[in-house]
Image (cartoon, rainbow, N blue to C red):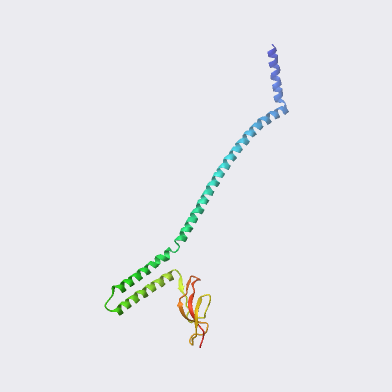
Length: 197
């Protein structure tokens, strides 16, 4: 009988507590807090995963960029190492022509005059081929003779008096000057006129 009384009293108390607005709110808050904690944990796990994915992506990008820089540096060094390859390739036919001229001169004919003419013709053709190759790479000779002496383009070797060429003008060249595109490649080595005696 005592147990039945306790049960009778227990049921109404629990129902009364649940029906109380303050207790119901506290119960809801504790259930909501558990749900919020669970939701926060899920959100934090999602953020951790995203952060890890972003970190991996950033590491891959950094590695790709590092590889790109290394590849660019290798290509730059290769370009520098073989920068003159095209010019040298173009020079080889000139060397071949000189070899042929030397062979022709060494073959010998009975007439030394014909031998000399053949040699000069071969050298002249070789020179023309070399000038054509230089023009292909935008190397052009400077016209110096008869022009006013310009220290930016000419290197004076000596000065000589001249009745034909005015003072401070180029009388003749020791070595021709050349320009590469818009830049002076080599100044002309010249004799400068000192004017009439």
